[in-house]
Figure 1 (cartoon, helix red, strand yellow):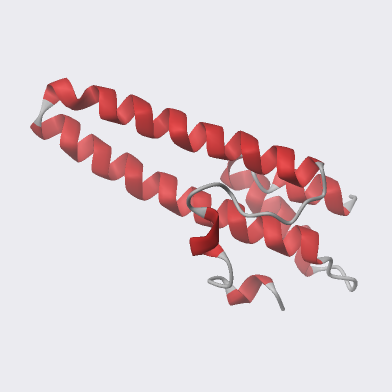
Figure 2: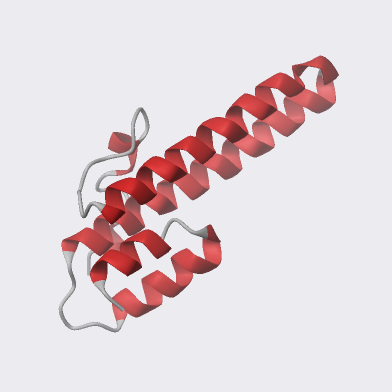
Length: 111
């Protein structure tokens, strides 16, 4: 697979991330584009899980707060699309608002 394809695949579900990661790890020429987008997408996956759990707890305590859950889901989906667009353009730019938090946090992706 091409580097661009691996970078895009990293954003497509957790299974796509795992496939992209395994393919990246067995390569001898490790491109920074793939590792960067693996890092960004893993951060987004973790963030969406945490926000999903938090919003579920909030909705269980205050049922009318389901709007918050919808906004959180929509927000993470928009970030996912922006990540796919950046990977397609072969750009190494962080996701808006949250992307800087993920830079350099997952060192196992670089080696």
